[in-house]
Length: 66
View 1 (cartoon, one colour):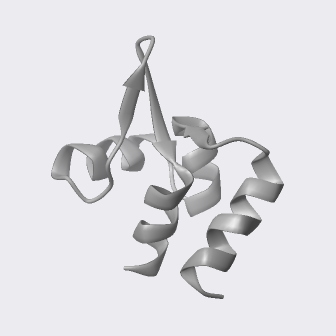
View 2: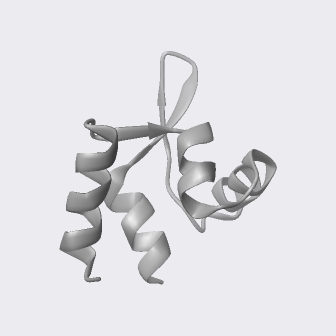
């Protein structure tokens, strides 16, 4: 599955453009602690909105593709 197809499948699955830390962890099949480590190391980019951490669908797809 290519990058664009994966982003489209994420969009169909979640019906939104940002995923929470828990949703991202579930999608990548890792723990939320691992997501925190990936964020701190710069391996995956995040956005902070209202004190919560979110990830764009494109960011998740880029990490999977890497």
